[in-house]
Length: 114
Image (cartoon, rainbow, N blue to C red; front, side, top):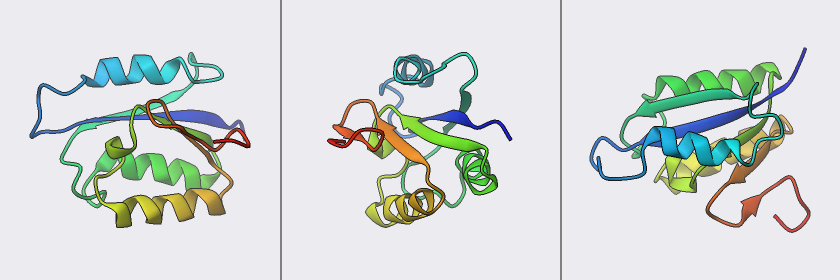
């Protein structure tokens, strides 16, 4: 199975003035090894929980199936504003050996310093 990088972008339904989904994707592509084949997941949903986010859950299915090797986000809060949700996702992607990059925070598991 070919592994790919995933880009996840979310724009809050409550803050329309935030960075657009397209701008987030563009910035994430700068960190992708091969941006032309990266799988892009995006949605306009609240960041309160990951439970009712179809694209996030579809991406996580890709993690579980072994198809996704790395997740790239513009900012950590694009995944969730809930620390518990982020910690759950973090534990799961570590279990599957998936790397994680946040473009705006110094959070990059692909390097020893990250």
